[in-house]
Image 1 (cartoon, rainbow, N blue to C red):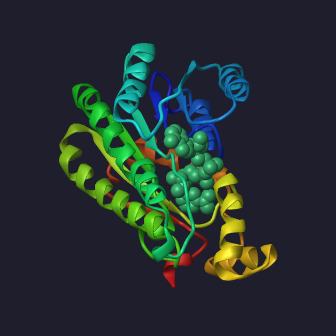
Image 2 (cartoon, protein in one colour; image 1 turned 30 degrees about the vertical axis):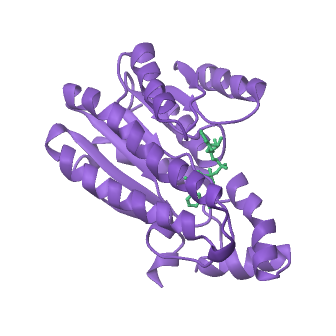
Length: 261
Ligand code: NAD
């Protein structure tokens, strides 16, 4: 247990990668602020399950990542509940697939707000406390799309390249304060986010579901396998460990070799 007495805020942790990271940090003893959308009863079940399974405290913040004031309140909830926010994982994200000339303006705005700007608001709120305690870990879930592009994902690729830049900038600013800032860049991970984009990709490219999975998604990954949420969570735990205290400003790929091409 390497995170006893630490507290972590994980945005978008009601599902997929964020939930796996929350559970992995809780397993190491961290108290947890869960966040994300979803069915109230389901979320309560998840929250209570983390407490009973790992013997930590977990609270839920309903903050909408589109709203700056709610994001700040999420960090304050962590500080009020646990006395500190030591670990911040900016993970909430959405996807939309469309040719650029048809890309709905409101979808562009939402993707930039949720996948990029929300991390700025959360970092802004969390850094003063981390500086005061001289310890902090900020982990941003970027993507292989922070390094390379795919057609029809203009907003997502722009936001993910943006979060890679934000990661490097903040890493430099807080480097002497015991705070590290890194991003994890997974390739395709089998989560609801990936499942949901299959119909749109079928439409945009005129393909069947099997063709999208094998010829578009796994085509990008030399290993021909999806990354698992637990593998991403394992890297997040490592970034919180003492062994990673000199790693900062890094963009860590976990993409089955995709971006080596
Ligand atoms: P997911 O859909 O399973 O989870 C997304 C989470 O974000 C959910 O908890 C959802 O409720 C939350 N969320 C969405 N909009 C929100 C809002 N307005 N306010 C608060 N929470 C909100 O997706 P996932 O695949 O686990 O994705 C998590 C992160 O990983 C995203 O940033 C995504 O871009 C990134 N990522 C995913 C993959 C992949 O293949 N699945 C690959 C690379 C990067």
